[in-house]
Image (cartoon, rainbow, N blue to C red; front, side):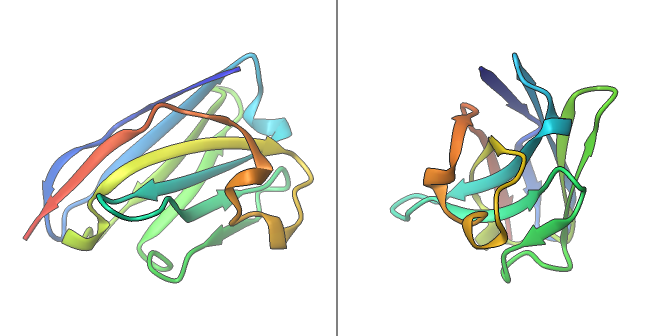
Length: 125
């Protein structure tokens, strides 16, 4: 299984970006799809997740600004990022896990078995 993430770039504070993640050999509709990010010198951290039933979860840092969704017909998961801040600068990774991940597991990297290569998001002030 491979995950192809795209959509990163260089933007200014307050701008928006939409990241996409398309897995091969796996369907987003039968997976928990998540987004993590890693800033220089920091550990990879949870950003957002969408479970099979389309319920969504967010870290406190992005709640109200970011939205995760999926399009089953396109077999693609998305992360819409609005009101971007310089502290959102990081490499963003998409990940796929079992469709029935329990809520307490969503934020933990070890519960995801497939990862994308990462896409850089840089937000200037």
